[in-house]
Length: 143
Image (cartoon, rainbow, N blue to C red):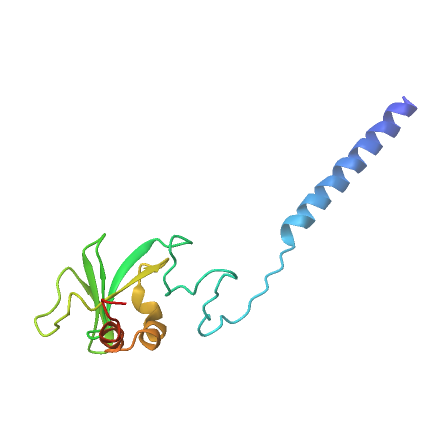
């Protein structure tokens, strides 16, 4: 009888300790908040091309024809044009009548983004209007 009381007290002490432990764990929470950065800078994977450059299968998911003279992107897969109008980028299956593209004056870009205009400022630096025509004029068929 003496042993039974001893074990009963011990059992209750263990149950009480475990209960307090689990109750205490649930009530303790730490939340660390920080202000979001204003604009995340693009992160380039080491060894790979920048997101707007031709990827040649490295990580490309979208292929665009970029027309430098009109600043228009065309994705053949979806049949969509991306063009700039009134301070914002527009997406359409056809171009407005005032935009003309030279179907022979384009650069093929492979990107991992479905928004080619996200990298437009870099693409425009790399392929300014008229640059492709100069390169084509400089090349000779006879060399």
